[in-house]
Image (cartoon, rainbow, N blue to C red):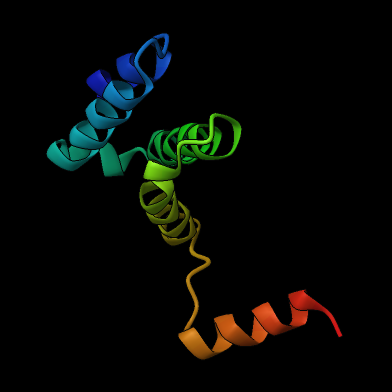
Length: 96
């Protein structure tokens, strides 16, 4: 867990290297899930970094990773729904 805190505080010089290290740490350290706030911060950092790379820097090669980050963020936030419910919400959001 301390390694995760250290990674999150560090300056992101190499964003892809940062993301790899962050994800590998989340996968390898079982106790990180015990600190829910820290885990959520890490997931938000992953999401935000990939969003910036895709939308601000035009890294189309990372769209799939960004989509995975969107799903991960939804899972962690407890917002995952059944496919039908999700599609019905999408219809509502598209407007009439």
